Length: 417
Image 1 (tube, one colour):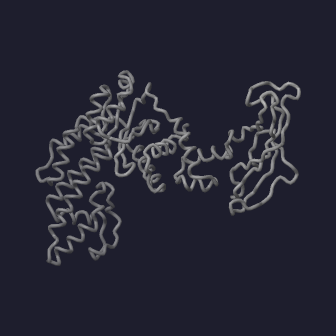
Image 2 (cartoon, rainbow, N blue to C red):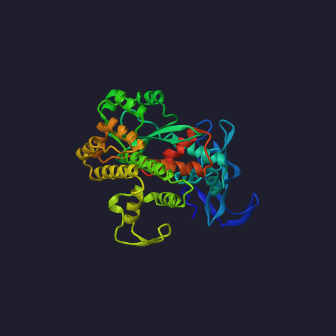
Image 3 (tube, rainbow, N blue to C red):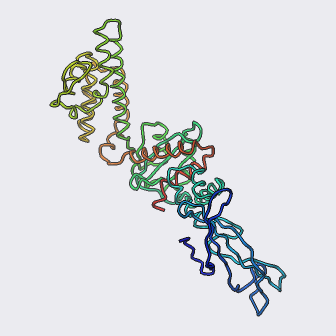
C-alpha cells in the first residue's frame, strides 16, 4: 500500500492510526527499522564480535504519498548503534529516504513527475503536503538532466520567440521533426544568439539542412552567418497572416467611408463590420446553396450572396479581395510557379496595405520557395508557446528566468526523458 521496498522495515499488529498532525486529520503508520550493520558509518571499521552494539531507537516522522487523500506519515523507529572503536553512535539507514531527510524519495519522484503538468509549485506542494521550497528544490534538481549538448544539432530546426519574465522577449528553438525543445534563451537579440550558437562547432552547424522562421531580420542574419548550408523556410502561417491582415485593414478603410450621418451609409457600415469573417475565408469554403436569415439584410441570403454584396461597396476592396484569394489558392496548391505569376501580374487597384505586403512577399520570394518545397512549419513551436503561456498564467508569473526555463523543459520534454 505504501510502496516500501526496504525489507528491513517491519510493522507491528496495530500499524496504522488516524490522528491529527498540524491540525489536519492524517494517517500515521508505525514501523521499525533494524538490521545488523557490517561496518561503522563514522570510522569505516568492520564489525568484529561486539564492537558494534545496538543502542536504542530514534523515532523519525517521514512524509509519504497521500492515501485516500489523507496526509500520510510513517513514524519510523530507527535502530541506533554504538561503535566501541571510535566511541560514536549512528542510526540505521534506508533507501526509502535520504540521510538527514524526512521526505521520502517516492514523494520527491511524484513531485518530479507531476511538475510536467500545468500546475503551480504552491499547488503541487499542497498536494504532497510539503513546503513550496521543497517542491522548488526537487524541480531544480531535475534541471541538471537538461544540459545543452553542443556536439550535435537536429537537421531541421524551428526558431521563435515568446514573452517570458516580465515583459522580456525570450528565444526558443526546437527540432522540427520530433518537436523536442532543444534550449530556451532569455534574450532574442542577435549578439545573444551569436554567442549561444557559437558554442556549436562549425561542422555541427553545417549539418543543419532547414530552419523555419517568421519574417524576422535578425534570424536571417544569424542563419547566413552561422548556418551556411541551411535553407530558410518562412512559416506559411505568417505568410497567410500577412496578406489576411492587409485585406482586413482594407475592409476597415472601406467601412469607414460609410461612417456618416446618412442612414443608408450607416447600414452599409454595419454590414461591413458585422460580416468581417466571411472576407477572410477561402472562396471555396463559402456556402452558396444554404440560405439563412440575416438580420442586417432582413431576408434570406447565402454566404456567397452576402460576400458579393460587400464587395460591390468598394472597388479597392473588391480588387484586393480577389488578389488575396489568388494567393490563398497558390498556397493551398503549393504551386510556386503560380505564386510568382500572381506577384508579377498584380492588379492596379490594390490597397496601400496589400501593396506593402506585396513588396514583402517579393523581398522574401526565394525563402517562400522553400516553404512550398518542404513540409516543415512553425505550428509545433506555436503550440509549445501556447503551453508556455498557460504555465506562466497558472503560476501567476515567474520572477526567475532559470525556474521558468526549467518548467518549460520539464513540461515539454519529460515524456521522452
